[in-house]
Length: 636
Image 1 (cartoon, rainbow, N blue to C red):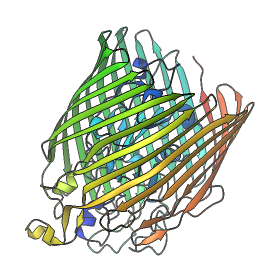
Image 2: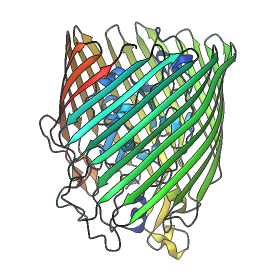
Image 3: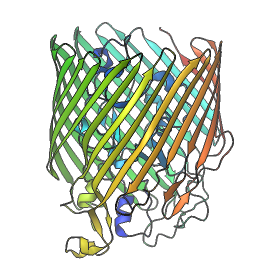
């Protein structure tokens, strides 16, 4: 069975599995923030950044990329950042309970640790487990999300096997504006946030603060396989804040400072040593995520755009019940990126990155350190109806050596809004600090996973409707899994129960279909994902991946009123020896805007009160009502 990542779940399993239940946080951040102010004319085509690290019109991209804009976020029926992404971009979600609980996620069937997550270009998450913690993030801080599906290690380095999720926080421009939201919901839930943004002379600013809390339900259902059920409610509290401040000393040049911090206090069900038989302690995750960056972007000449960035990120987790474990990670990075216009419609992108990662944890005998240097070269050119994009990247890491990855994409505009495209690339996933150094599990000589991916797509864009479809296949080898047979481990008594090993291959193939349209006052959106994710050695399905997932959303606008409904359908999934049944969720929304600045809204999540088992023995929320008010000034 392929190694998959999930929330902390200590149990009486093998030492290797217990090792994977711990969460550290030392993400390797390998990207830079690019401001939309330097993008192409948005009146011609929506602009994306993640597909090429430099702004480009989405119609020119050879990649499969989804944009979730501010309006879509404002009108969402999703309960969290991860739920929003799965509805809009087809990401599958395996969450250990309701909102605020730890989650795994799969883009195109790739492991949780095979997706890169960025906030304003800064990579977030745990480098010991290798996954970002979506539960730490708040929708209150999000202005836009770009989801790049497919092979992208040649742009973003390690772990970009399934794709990249980039979250952009708000940036100020124009007249000063303010916003505020307050909502009350079932399960003693509350959400509130305030913000302000704008510009004055050469200065621009944006500030956002938010608070959320919910009593929730018991994350684990009675009768679970490990005896971890505790009838108490497992709720959460989350405080978040972000600040962006920019100074433009001359046209085409900007110096920016970015800061974001979230604090999560979430209860969960578990047991703890020595016998793992007592679920009564009050288990909690106290997680602080902090990101700070200083960057400059400017145009020394009309054909040259350069970006410099220094960043620091901290991930501080204290987890447990009567026994508390603290894990602190720090990373510092310097990046220099350059875009050179070398001809009409042609551009070269060159970047150099250096990152230092450090982790301290109770489980490790000493501080863990590794350094990565990387060079990136990219090309993009448009020749009439043809677009060609290619990039190559070389990473050299002090812990696991050097890796070279590449990608090439081609798109052809047939006319009448029709575009065909094809893309192929190579990827790698770096071994985590757990894989390399966790006592009794990690092996210092473990090697990165490697993959080869191909895809082909077609799209049509009309005045009031659009349709897109993509077929893909990704073959991954040298998967890092827990090997229980100690004969495959180094000759050391520490590995008597097994170790980490490159012992598996997987094939991820499938199709995605998206359609949207407007007919008079009615907006419709449909997403369909079909996935065949299998272990190539045994032919069995990979755990927690559904063979299909669909989402449908409809909104009807009548003057000051907006009526909305959305449905999510998830197929059956294998999980820890059983097959979880498929499920469907219906959400309803009503909004009334008496004035341009004010909106009163009511939502009914899981309106049919369906029982949802997102992960074996865990349960999601039942029917939950919300009522709230939203204010957004048009200028002060």
